[in-house]
Image (cartoon, rainbow, N blue to C red; front, side, top):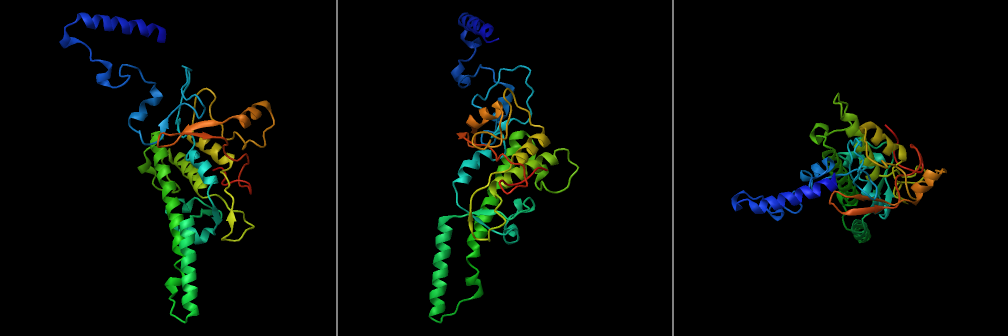
Length: 308
């Protein structure tokens, strides 16, 4: 197709020289860079969602497929909800909190979580809380009045950290649904029972995003202890693919790759372990992911979440 199209364009340009100026086709620069070039159908939603999830064929190095028989469904970038945030999440500090103490600050993920989560530790908030505690101790030692509200003030730092990440999770939920072409306003409360045919898909998106933003904390540790980030379990990811019926081209989608493919033994699994995946964030920037989701089925002590 591409070889046949080239001569046709040259003929059109030759004809244009013989036509009067008023009837000539505009120069490509006048209609935008690459104006006459045909766009693949899978890229059309970019025109409407430039700042949201970007349609693509797969979460592999080459994002465009030449397979004419390929039938795509819900192939967006990032391919999995909030998967592009996994590296930055792992580099953060986390502290265990009881679900009962923090769910009240979650307007979005509060109904999703069923475990004691880890909450991000922000150094500035920690410093502020430490300074407040020291000031209260000094005033108490001097016999000065200390009110109950001042004693409970350090909780404000925790409240802000939880609410901040909950808002981020809600934003990523709306962004991902919009990229899939699903009306997010029909699913503002994805955990609510609904007869809407797409509600299970919206629910699976919300679950995977909340598992990413609020990882499970080890049950044997006490609240307040620092913990490591636990990636979402592979069956949480697979549940999203199956529930939404996500279909992509060529190599398709795999929830586990890189160092995360610890339990695989066959040759195909060895290739997945060695693979680095490239995806794109909502801001359009390319992100390399050396590792996918945890190669464990939840509920598990080694990962976050479970299947629906």
